Amino acid sequence: MTEQQFVKDIIPLNERLSRYAWYYLKNKDDVYDVIQEVYIKLWRMKDTLEKYQSSLALALRITRNQCLDFVRKRSKSHELLIGDSISDPEVVSDNRSEVFEYIKKAVNKLSGVQKEVMILKDIEGYDYNEISGILDMDINTIRVNISRARKKVREMLKDLECCR
Image (cartoon, rainbow, N blue to C red; front, side, top):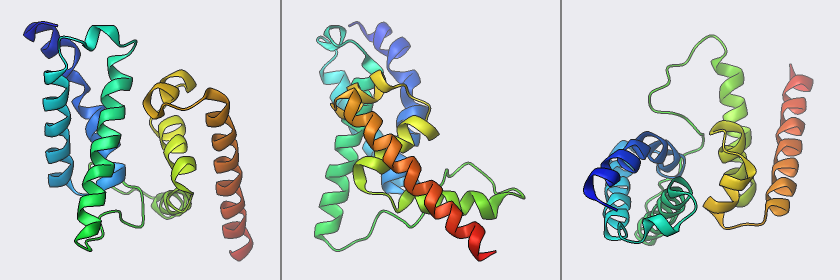
């Protein structure tokens, strides 16, 4: 892959990669650092990128792994990086913010895999094949985890309705 192809095909992924990293790190500076590492890895792989079916799926997988490594390194020094809610740093709350915050908290309470697949499918809008490539997971396993995650979130939302 030439430098021009890299700039044309890989650099525009920045927003998606940053948004995905945000779900793990919840800190703008940490996201920036991780994304820089992702681009360095991708640049070093530039001669072999064309053999991958989807450069986006590869970039997201590298981002995921970099974020997990970053969190592991930080947790060893007893710093808590992952917050209590999923939020986008650029989104400003509106009138529906209370319900939206409850949904984000419900999604954040899900187990690791269920949380990941729900974020990728329902929040980021990836299809099952893309999620399979990102997480290196069987599509049927993804479907089962999405179904279970949605069921749990629905149950949590029913609890909210009962308490009002």
